[in-house]
Image (spheres, rainbow, N blue to C red):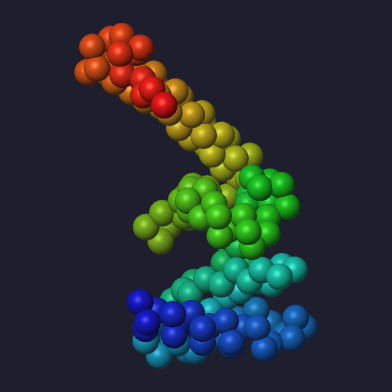
Length: 154
């Protein structure tokens, strides 16, 4: 983990020190990942979105991918900020998983991405309702069914 944090720190330092007027590409900047790796990034307000890709990837294609990712996050969180990413990292990963999986771009339509996320949210809330209902009935069965007999008297 210490090595990972060191790499993240170096990536941030390299990207953050560059003026916004510079291009959004850095080549061969992370020795741990090899010589054919380049960083492609976008800076939005206080957020940096950085993708590490091999030299064969299209720079403009990755910039477009970052744009789709940020727009989807923006609509998902209604103006995404650092706190959304920190406290809802699972949801951020869901969005990214709808866009990219196994290094392959699956979807770039924001409406399709958001619909998948809404469907996933619905399935999650439905499963929680079922778990809550099942849990209450299981607890009652295990305790003999009469809730008055297991309530603590203060």
